[in-house]
Amino acid sequence: MRVLVVEDERKTASFVRKALQSEGFAVDVCPNGNDALAAAKSTPFDVIVLDIMLPGRDGLSVLRQLRERRDATPILLLSARGEVNERVEGLNLGADDYLPKPFELAELVARVRALVRRGGENKSPVLRVADLTLDTLTRRAQRGGSEIELTAREYRLLEFLMRSADRLCGRMMILEKVWDYDFDPGTNLVDVYVRRLREKIDANFEPKLLHTVRGSGYILKERP
Amino acid sequence: MIIRTRLTLWYAGVLILSLVIIGLGTYREIDEQLRHAHRREPTEHAISETSEMVFQVGIPAILLGLLGGWWLTRKALAPVSKLTDAITKIHERNLRESLSRTRNGDELDRLTEVFNDMLMRLDDSFNRIREFTLHASHELKTPLTVLCGETETALRDESLSPTERERLVSQLDELLRLARIVDGLTLLAKADTGQVALKLEPVRLDELVRENFADTQILAEPQQIQVELAGCGEIPVRGDRHRLRQLLLNLADNAVKYNQPQGRVTMNLRRVDDVAEFTITNTGPGIPPESLPRIFDRFYRGDPAHSNEVDGCGLGLSIAKWIVSAHRGTIRIESVPDQLTTVTVRLPLDA
Image (cartoon, rainbow over all chains, first blue to last red; front, side, top):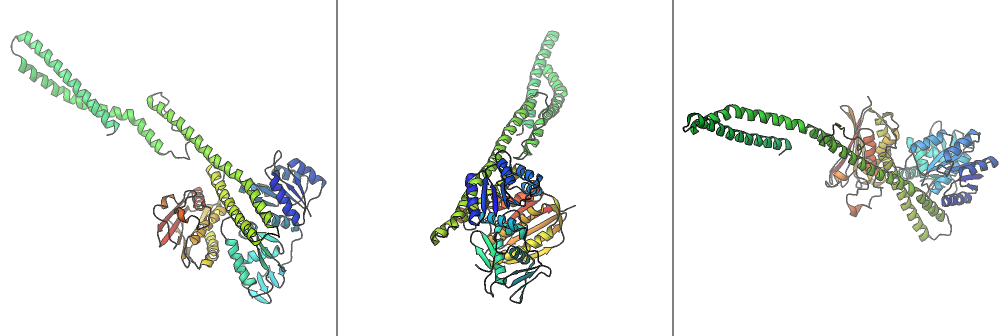
């Protein structure tokens, strides 16, 4: 798996590269838009992490150029401005995700992983992790043969976590996908909901499936 | 004493004085003529003649003069009243709308011109401060990104001792809090400079309130706080869905955070005349009366001794107020310490 990081701020580029490398990605870094366009032409990348504010040609222009030459590589936009309009504009231009700075590194890694796996996403109507199953047609959750009652929100949360099974899900990402919040409300909403969900799916069962990654987010997987 | 009265009195004084002078002059003239004509004591005759003239002509003339003077000063000072009215309407957001000038070159026109110049300078300074805040919050983001990233990178090191790990985690928590403050500041600075556009659409406020009610129940559970929804009929408004959700969550979060264990939160949405009224009450310790007027100020902490007890960015209510104002609504907080604190939001209904 090969990722191109387009970021002019040297330190940011450096820790993003380290984090992605430690997750097993091969990482190339470009400090400006023109280099990035050249690199993307000669090497096929699995994901491009693209900062919007670049010297010279900015990120949105790089994005437009890439899409114009029918390069469909998944793109994660980074921005220090964090404007709703910018987000909408980026997604309209064909970006696949958007992350405002300052971001949590774990959040960035989780999003890159999500982009890589997007193609191979589980399309089956019944999701399964160990003996926990979720039928997305009947909206029924079961573990060890017994029915689990879920509220509408809990259902959406569990569905998201199960679709992203074995991958770290950052708090912002959960807020975005489950609550449709594009701002950080500064509450512990996610943590409280996860705690409740854990009561329901993990309390009376072994092994535990829903794990907390401190300071970063949550992960649903069979083995810790 | 207002200028108009003062000028009228001065004018009356001048009139009376001139009348006395005219009276004296007339008296001497008549006296002289009578002396030449009859060569005998004319004084009494002259006095009565003069006073007759003064009363018959002078008093009505004074009254007429007074009336004229009152009218004249009124007319002369009318632009000043107009100026006063216009100046009362000035606040920090409309400094650009300068006062209208007569352009007749008189003193008042000159005053208006100078005043307009001053407004321009003030507006420039205000803009500079707003832009400074905006730039400052942008500038803070890059170093914050670096700090968060490097702290997280350090946390990935498996060989960290539990103490070192604890320290880094606490550092990261504070960095994330700082990031939230900077985010809030950026939003408000952008709103100040008119760079945040609301996406207005028909929104069912009752649906947002119900959704928020469900989340609040979950948020309140750990402290065993009871959450109630007293009323929530169908209420359509025109608004920005995301911002209204942000507003509701913000108010609900406050009602839970500033409550006491086993307390109560009550929400109510109803229609009052042609506005939607949402109230949310909590049974927390409340807000002392001296803090109420400043409660929407940025970073205002009522009691500095307790400012760190509740985790928050200090901008929540300022953001709430901005969201409400941007929807042409009003927000109000009332508090009876140790009993009930009520936040009331009123938004215009969708016509």
